[in-house]
Image 1 (cartoon, rainbow, N blue to C red):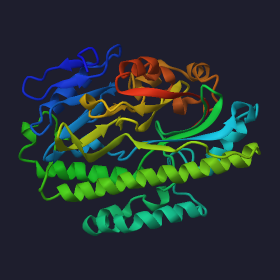
Image 2: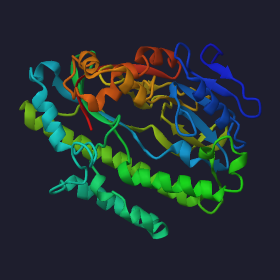
Image 3: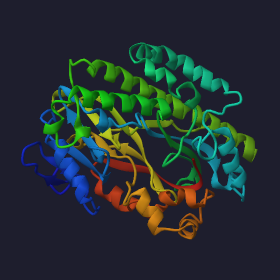
Image 4: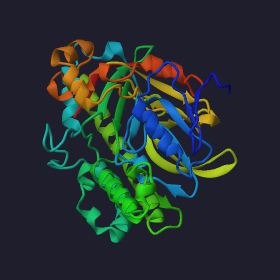
Length: 406
């Protein structure tokens, strides 16, 4: 490791910030957030910044925050366990039909997506598939333990959101790699129940610190001290939500595989290990000889040999990667391209016609509802990958041919 691999940003009254961002723009507001986070007294050694970093709530998205003796719930966020899953099939591009509209339609029917205000209500299962019941049977006991302490969570969308995609930047894609092999890939997390858990504990952290909030650089840096009233409850709840997110992706992937099988008619199998990784989560890990809580807020674990997924924007390339175990980054890499502008700015700047041109090679929605996801609203994925060449190696480069968004 040399200083050429990352940029060092010193913090006047805190730990350093190490940034793998060469060749990638980082907003001034994101830098301010990074300084605020690094100033917290329980941060361990330094904050690591991925090349897709951009402004988040309290803490910068695309940051890795190692802590000892405390956790910041808002740094984990409300999309707990959000992440990616991908499988490689035995299909090749030649096996796909000339028109991919039927494939996209079959996936949209198989996986509820959008919101109750939008396209399809995720809770509107006429009869949930058996995989939903099976997943919930595994998840229900842990959830009941949490609800016993926090009864308000019983009123959340928990069971009904298993196997559903959601909206925003969550997606399902059919992709083709450098050897024309077909991959199925999706992006989602813990849905309504994860959001409720995150919001509840962020509020509890702020309430617990009410007398101390004035001394924080940002109220969303409110934290639980290890051993405090809500610390263990939070770790239990966030761990459960992360399990929920992983199960949710597995149930959706099963439905996607079934939809593709029923549509194209060509028998196929899955010939590679499935990759299923979080990029919004916290867990205890050992780094630099110490046990620490590692919060990855828009970052992926990249231990030596560990497989991960770095998606590009809608219509851009995505990557299956293998971690290089770079300890300076706390064995992490980026979780995607990262937004270059806000959703509001993207809608102001771009039109549906721009979206149609930018996604001409992809079977996907091309309407005003997804203009904020236009590729130009994201950073250049090639620049992002170049900035983290000391963190991961690329195994496969994928290009989207079908994209389903909520």
